Image (cartoon, rainbow, N blue to C red; front, side, top):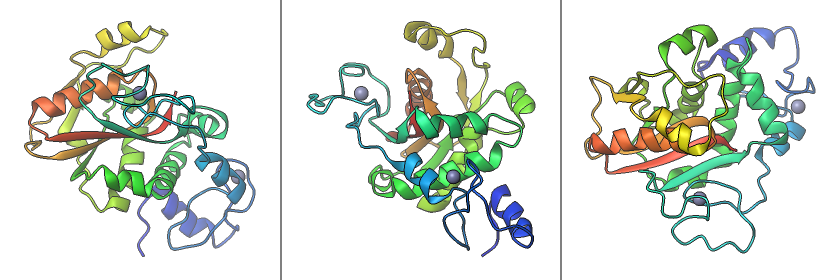
Length: 246
Ligand SMILES: [Zn+2]
Ligand SMILES: [Zn+2]
């Protein structure tokens, strides 16, 4: 099969010289071609283990006996515009360390392989969302310029490939950069993000079931604002997939 990602391409060349190594710890990578996963089996287990109960609506970790009807205590009564969230895990431990790596200069292959891991480890939950199209949460162009790529788009690309769905990164456009140097409260974040997106010129959301993809969900205001725009543009359903829920 043809290499799909930067990671696959780099591996194709590197395999001739070095045995594949884990992107996180330098141990040997767990498994073989055609499509690799980037991580050794210990790291993969750590990244995919998610034993805690979680809210099906916002993916927050909840106690084992929490009543989840209509959401968890954190999201019940909040109209998010999306009705389900799938996560790889909590924003903690190995997953947090891996996500921090995606923000570094050689971060793109890590983001890609985390996306691939999410697609495979949560395949059943992702399919249950019955999406018809995949849309990453966009980065503001200025931010993409400094980082070189959009992590959410790298993850979304892998999800779209695994689910055999069209990927439409241009359907949602970021018009306002994210707040960078502050740790705003949930309310402040919700206000900041208002009007941060617009629907792309060639978007066609009418009747679509949309899977919105982001790297980390913290207060859910970003995903909620994206979902609000997408619903306003006529989508019938919005589900969310994230690498991690803070
Ligand atoms: Zn490893
Ligand atoms: Zn919840």
